[in-house]
Amino acid sequence: MTKKTKTYSLFECIGIELEYMIVNRKTLMPAPISDQLIIKKIGQITDELENGNISWSNELVLHVLELKTTKPMPGLEGLSDDFHENINEINGILAEMDCQLMPTAMHPLMNPLTDVKLWPHERNEIYSRYNEIFNCKGHGWGNLQSMHINFPFANDKEFYSLHEAIRHIMPLIPALTASSPIFEGNGSDILDNRLAFYEKNQKKIPSITGKVIPESVANKSEYEEVIFKKIFQDIAPYDKDKSLQYEWLNSRGAIARFDRNAIEIRIIDLQECPAADIAIAEFIVQALKYIIPKLDDFNPIDEFQLYDIYRLALEKGAKSTVSNQNYLQLFGLENESSISIEQIWRSILKHVYLSEDKKQIIEYILDNGNLSQRILSNLKKENWSEKNIKSEYELLVNCLKENKLYELR
Image (cartoon, rainbow, N blue to C red; front, side, top):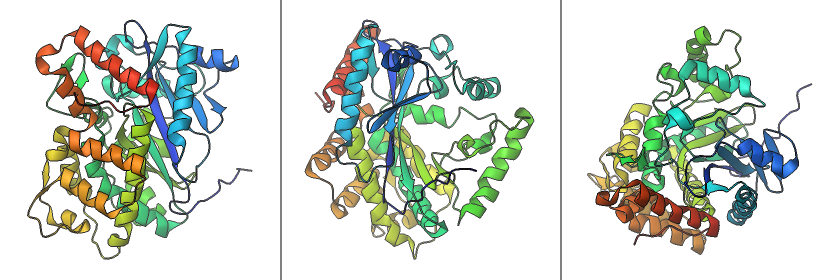
């Protein structure tokens, strides 16, 4: 008999996942040793181990480790310290192998063609199938670290409210959270390169990612008809034994997990420290609570219009302007002909409650730019040597160790 998963109501609990790259302490290059780390911790290979409030688990590639809340948490208070304690413990173990954890959403120098090694242990058959179909030796597979936030819903009514709120807040998120300005030693015109690669990593079967912003659907039945049915049909020629035809195959930027009645947001770049990650998570929670009541008399905006705003945010950040009047109406800004994403976030901040420490972090990001912008400003383009890039990312590694913000100099 299948064990029934406990159902939670809106905002009754939350789950957080943070992904970190393991790198050599001297060279800062990726170290494919997550399995060795787990063996040193518990003496055997496993794909997940519990360590109090935080669990450790493997990812697709051997140089990435995921830390996540062991069970649904009633709130985010104290989680920054919980994650930081685990990071310190992991770094202590990794030091024996001359390695450490590195934050941010993309390694600035790695070459995925040579540096990616897939996890070879439990669940390897799934990873191997992905690799056969999509070739996982690319930035969109082997060089991306993010924060995922899991929100519960109890029934179709709550699902619809939560899903619509998430759909409409998603376009703003990259402007706040981009932390991937450099890859292979070069920058681009895009602040959030992780997301730019993310939307292309399964282009062989476009329905899997869709427009990143999910379609507006009323309930589980419609979600299955509109989203899952198309994805499973399109993957079928490459997946004869149906080993991939599960909810997790859906790669939109927010996915419904009806197996545990939750929606998972996946477009948030990993920050420099848990304090920043958790402050952002709390801000997103409060933003969703703020706009859910406004959706009662609001006609949902389709994924194509929302994608246009999202793309502006991931490319240019918070200074990008939004002129979609229907969208601005949702935030009480319909009297503005156009307004920057930064101003939309500031408007939301005025209407929600954050603890003083988290509010200060959000204000710092809005005042000084997202992490990508701060990295680029501090590094300065004329100094983009490998040596200088590594020196800058050493500072980010120290921010992770000390759980402090990376500041604009």
